[in-house]
Length: 355
Image (cartoon, rainbow, N blue to C red):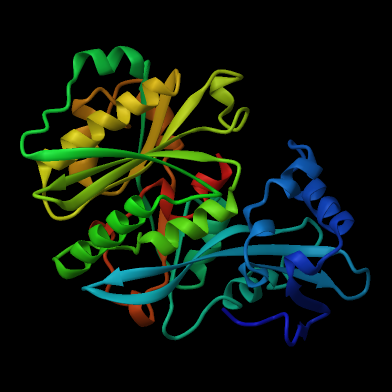
């Protein structure tokens, strides 16, 4: 990303600097103006970019007052498109404070993350951000499929994972440790996906997961890895949701199916992993488990296991309204992307960091 820390960008009465370099009181004042329905200190403390590299979030400071006028986060990753890796950034946390709209601050913040060789995308953004990105030439928005499974403890009694020739191995990972066997399996699965005719996707090897675990070091993930003849072919990752972040659950425990990855069109492995993910959520004591996907075969498999989807009567409208949309900039490596050939889950932006 562009290094605003080395040379702050000044123009039009505003200066762009790394968000982590700004006094916390100024950030709290910004949060109070932008998110009036949430305690501002908590909103800043919980921000994922406070624990990432300084270049992952940029703010626009008003030169005359020193106030924070806008903020934009850029979640770094690599994307694999047609078997080739490319640097990528997901635009997140993109807001302009009241009183500073109409000054092109949002455009400057987004362009701070652009580069000719970089995939630029967004997953789970506000309606206002969608309109702004469309005006900047981005493709979309396109909906993901947001799904919910109530009472996973009951559902797991109705479905058993048929393993066949698969071996299922489970691991626990935290911000302090990514087990060596799991790290090796993640790298081998990603290598297998990169060699095949897979949809465009975020690279999910050990390095990516180590970075993610460091951002939210307080969290614990449960993994199930499916292997065939000793070769890993896919995995599922499940964790408890953060108390209070999913308002509909109140103080009750929920779970997130953070990631579901299968190399190739391996429906047997997909069913085994999805079934085991439901069981892991039940073992965590969750009253409901949530997932998001842009892969039709994954959505269909989760539906067969009992997940509610936007196609359901009544509850479907609720889920459809909360389905995170995705967009991308059709330039550079993203020029040839298509909505039906992009694989996204909760792991792809910062949804997993926020909930």
